[in-house]
Length: 536
Image 1: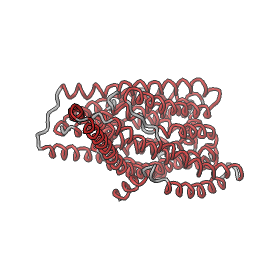
Image 2 (image 1 turned 60 degrees about the horizontal axis):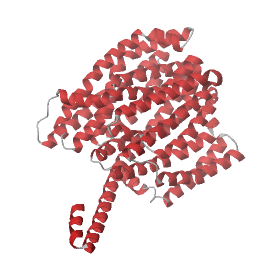
Image 3 (image 1 turned 180 degrees about the horizontal axis):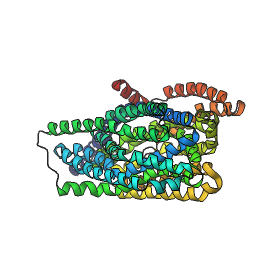
Image 4 (image 1 turned 45 degrees about the vertical axis):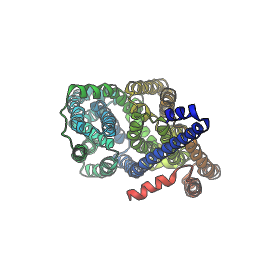
């Protein structure tokens, strides 16, 4: 169109201006239409994933309540430390394949090369099997020294027994995570939501109750928790295979066999991601492990339970990021950075709208919330407040980390996560010995802020993609002026009590919902609601 306008300008300046105006109008309309389509697609997947995240969060709270109430704080701490070590090992065993498959599958579908999907899946999955078996053996071999590092006295042998008992399930956990996440490359959240966030999550508290009911104790609870991955893997494998077969059939071309070029392309992106993914899960769990090492496993259990109120916002952010990531990959592959920025700003607004009311309440009413887990867990009050403040600041930035990954910059993403590990580990080693679990919360809060701001700056400078925009500011202002004001007044007049929390939640939520209704246009809530209705 630019060439046509230039040609017209040579003969008729007025005609050129008209053509330029039409070109601009057409471009704007195309961009708006593309953004609207992307927002609608993300809304449909995000609505389902948000619903699954709510159930996942409730199930995880149920699991923690069961662990603390049935096993006691001390034994719950032992189990949670073992789960932390198992989770880190299982993530290392994934060697970044989950992210590699999400990105590669979405890119192959974007350029209509579905016949390469079976080969890509095999290239990504087979090394995970090997890594899982190797790390299971390593976990068995190192169970005793790890237990000695994390516990003392009679607890040492218990932790070692739990780790050895959980180790055989490590390959299943790694494969399940890779398979269920790979399905996201097909622009669907159904397997992730129904298999992991609903099915497995709801089964965990039940399994723990059964295990403790038959007298299995902490070891049996650890084994039962890990064993749920075997059943989940069966479902996730079927879900991935069906989608791959359908995609190949849709092309009308025979499936391609794996080759060195495919493997080199896949692992050149994925290999750095293996380090980054390990660093990410380390950030989520290392503080619990460090608290166990520097203080006690009981303190680690208190800290892990008390800071789990961070999870609802994290799950909400992940729910939106997981749906947005493949869509962003497609947009960036086609060079549509303006559409990517518009989509990310809308998603950042949704993320802020979900997270701000939650963390206003957790910041102002930590005591009644923590009492749910038991009186001992109230000691994590300072850590919960610190994390709540960090999440309030980070929420408006949106799912910016996915931009760096989905643009193919896995090495830059790896560098970012290594920075986070340095901040987290260094801060914990420096402050936890003198200031306890409150310091661990503040350090994790600082890590959250770096995790939001660093990739945000990088995406803006190098990719010209922005995530911070009007929707996030509108959502933050609305939450602060409704839920924030009501909660602050309740805290000042009634105090950090269950009564104050009840008043703030009921009246604040009512005011906030009215505000969402009035501001649904700038927050694009109609698109989100339509996504919910279509999914229903």
